[in-house]
Amino acid sequence: MDLGLTGRAAIVTGATRGIGRGVVEVLVREGAQVLLCARDAAALEVVAKEVGHDAVAFACDITQPTAAAAVVGECQRVFGRVDILINNAGLATVRKVPSLTQDEMQEDFENNFFSAARLATAAANVMKEAGWGRIVHNSSIDGVAADKLFPAYSAAKAAMLNFSKSLSQQYAKYGVLSNCVVPGITLTESVREQAASSAERLGVTEAEVMGRILAKQNPDIGRVGTVEEVANTIVFLASEAAAFITGAALVVDGGTLRSC
Image (tube, rainbow, N blue to C red; front, side, top):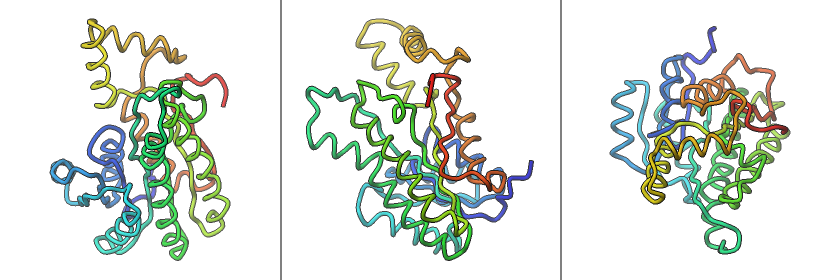
């Protein structure tokens, strides 16, 4: 299927690892040009070199208030346009409610909601003038069914689901569509690292930790998801093939959520 992405200019945040890196690879394969955004300049350059000439690195901290305008401006400068925004950057930190502080809540919301909301608004205003745009936010099943280990992260992801609908209501009539992908447990570098850390702390193997995670999530499919499976869904929503989908939350969790 031709996704109609040839020549489109995309911004991908959190582009050096995991789902973000996977999205970059799929977009470039489909003919898009991509601005890779993350904090680690060296890691960005490595990814850009590996992906090819259609990927350009732009190091920045998107939690900074001025970052949204800088990112959108850089995409316009490099590619002459902004067609697609993939709000992928985020961070989940174990923080239980009894000891959750104001600073920790603020940090989780900056990492997982405020930065993405600012960037989406900046991009949408540029896309509106062009009459075409796709904004896809990487949310989480925790935004639908809160996880007690990640209360502020869960709340921030829930806010993103809601804000995406507001963006759709405001911009869809101008051809700018906003949707969320809601992944379940996905085998990213971060998940592997967390499993290794837990295994060392508990004195068990990484396989045992992953088995416990799988048992807790209990997806109907019986396994964790892959980066490519989530990345393919994100790119679909960013394409012409999803021209009649907006304000939606597409769950990609192997049947983990029992209702949504």
